[in-house]
Amino acid sequence: MKMHRRSWRPLLALAFAASTLTTFAQPASAADDQNTFASQARAEGLTTAEARGLQARVEAILEKDGGTQIAANRVRWANGAGDTTLPLPGEKHARNLTTARSPGTLLYGCDYGYFCTWQMQYYQGAKYSYYYCQDYATPYSFNSYENNQTRGTRAAFKGYSRNVIYWTPNGAWESHPTFSGLSTYYIRPC
Image (cartoon, rainbow, N blue to C red; front, side):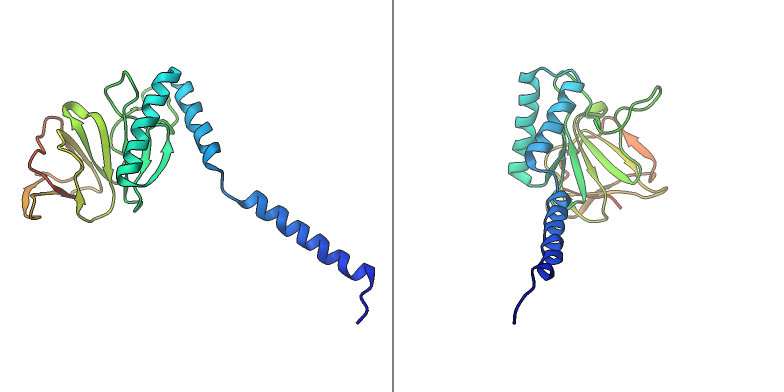
């Protein structure tokens, strides 16, 4: 079978177009993400050393627990069920760097639909945000919590053998700035 020159040109054009679309449709590279995170750190006024220190803390979480870095100070858990947010160097409270700030906007806290714990009293230190109704192993002893789930939802704190040792008393919305979660090994937000 003899092929005419004109018959393969549309195929070549189609192949070129497909390869071009594939190139543009691919997700951003890790280097692009790192540039974005570095830009966030600069926008927050962090020095190069502070930004490197923050990145080292994020990488330690990723190495230990897995997941995906989604901001200069934030890791989305591998199962997608929540995230860890770190305070910036020199700050006490963890906050979301991807939320636009306007006058009167709370810079830190627990997003609606989540149950959150903090390492230290008065919502200071690393913040862990739990979303799905399942048992979560607590990565540390926590000392404050906020229940910002749907109205009336209560969380259960469980001991080593997954026995319930404490129910949040009132259901959402509620918070406790000085709670000792020392004996809590699991949290079930609902």
